[in-house]
Length: 148
Image (tube, rainbow, N blue to C red):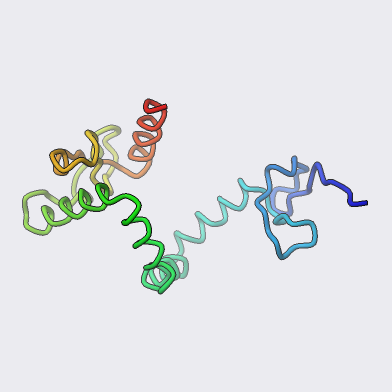
């Protein structure tokens, strides 16, 4: 008879948390990582900001697996892909300034990308506002909840 685990000790923050707070890992004996999800996300975020993490991510995006995942995403969301392509062409042609030279429309922080605030339909492809990543994520989450 197997025992079910209800809690686990996080090796990073040293707290005992419910098992649902730990990511799955098939290679470990109990089937869960030794770090909780919060600590794991913090470690990933700090690693991605290092030069080594940036180089790894850049290499992954160009790898066979990274390209395959990007193609699958573009096939699943063709309108989104076409709208982003139109914006990047507009930036290249000088019709739009690069987003990183502008301030976020929502919080006045430096912008990183353009947000399609009306949607990805072809008629709205160039109706964009500059946004930082945080505000863009919030806008997409808000729109998702409006659709439900």
